[in-house]
Length: 396
Image 1 (spheres, rainbow, N blue to C red):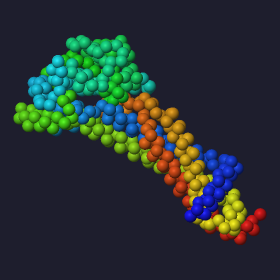
Image 2: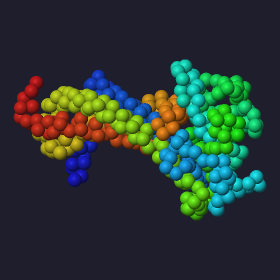
Image 3: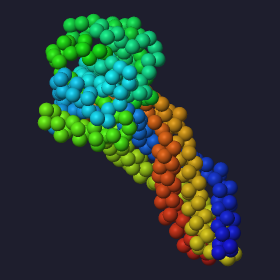
Image 4: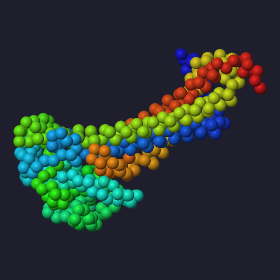
């Protein structure tokens, strides 16, 4: 075993020392693999960023009450008296102002994107005074919050970056009314940053909603009180509602689009990986061909076939990992934190988010690079081990 290891080490070091002599082919192979890694990480960082925006938005101690049978706020409807009944349910957290429950409207408005000028569906949310306390992570970072009863709005930081007309102090025409942007808020990067907020009571008449809402966001005393809160509402014959955890609601909304993006990303990366694999094969075949006599000499001196195979695989692996690291670095500096928006298929509204290159994504991509290197070196390694010693030594 020790003899094998020493032979592998000796041959591998000799192989690596000759890489500069074959730098053209080696660089081509590494660049091909770097491209695969950069594309894979770049596309998957879109899915990860979108998923993170949804996960950050969801809390286990916040419940979302919707009309029974609805799958999103867009298709839900709850009457005003029912929202007050929900506010009296057991397990609901309270402060000095009353229950931490926010009856809310959710509508879609059109605003042009800053980057392209094309119109996009932007979510506008009418909220109750308890909305800030219910979510817990919404903070005004510029200006102030809207005043009750006025045509004033606050814009999420993501929406303000992506869509025109949401600068602090600007005025928007929504419905038949003019609205003033009086504040910008953040929500730890969550989906709320893609929204525009205003007083629900002001928004209701604009969309002819009367005394009705679409959902109630409720902060619970603790995550463990969810079942008691849910049972008290779903068993009430006067109500026709369903109750879900906010975290589960947003996780479900993120599933379809993240799976779609991941599928596309892996498919594209797989096609590129095939090209990189052929590049690695060509590089390693060239490496073996250039050292035919050297390998035969080592075999004649007593070096075994197995150390030769392993040494060629290790050389291919080193080139692949070098390409993987380069590709990962390119992806991180090019994509991580890049701000964009995409449509949420559940609500057909835009969600602003940032690409997220995580250590897990980089690790996954490096593993891809390693497999490309190993597969690309396997056949050349076997060929190197099968070189006829006598014939190779006679070559000039």
